Image (cartoon, rainbow, N blue to C red; front, side, top):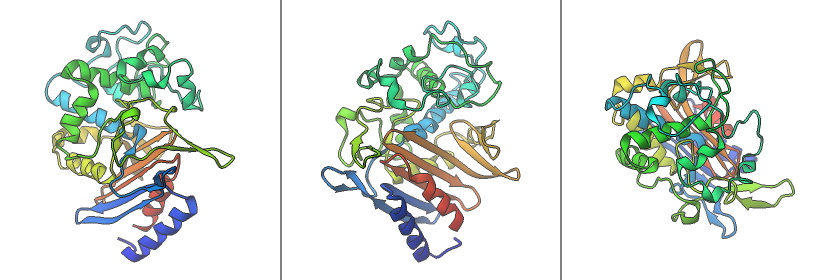
Length: 341
């Protein structure tokens, strides 16, 4: 560490106050936890504070779980990265390219139409005007949002972040494994990682110690995100974790206990450059480079009332997990940590 622990506590505390952060900051390395702190309220109306054990939604942060599931099934011989979507699913996709592969879906280079294209749509809540969020309980419920649309570009042509592609990957897991997607993740990923406090919880059945997501309005008022996100998460996002559980996931994955070391190497390969010249994408994971050297593997997530950042730094073997039940904050704290550790 570049700074002493006491200095780190002070630096983080000042930034937390400055940005009015609500969530948890968890930092650890091979020797154990370096810093763990909780801030803000998990329930504002009841003034219930966030704790280190609070569960948070992580939005797209859990695309990593979907990628791990696919890689496990590849290792089991159930499919390959070059398997074509057209040969794996029975649903009709009349305008999709028949040559699109699992690898292209994993790397956001498939070209399939995205049900929430951030280049076109600013407000995630617009989706639920014609498709009520309380109907979105299963992966198949998302198909009418995109399955009859035209391709955006030819498969493999470029990187374009895509939620629909990960819905399709989740459907592949369901078809090949023969179980609901969320059951698969909880058994084969959360279980071996001992993520006992994590799961895909329905908004109308949230367990204890779960933070409500908050949307702050310009006039100073706020509301929860209960009618702003799908009622249950799936393959493109929406799981709930505790910060310590997410750290367990990183460690279990990197130790080769979820997939083999050979498969892990494939997951961590910078397959395609993103829209940022320093960022690449592997399988379900962002990869940051400096002068051709990988300095950071990370995942992130944003939904109404949710923001999340988590990363692994190979040089220091540091794991950082920052979930929040507000729409911003984690990345500012992550960048601050990177400056001082």
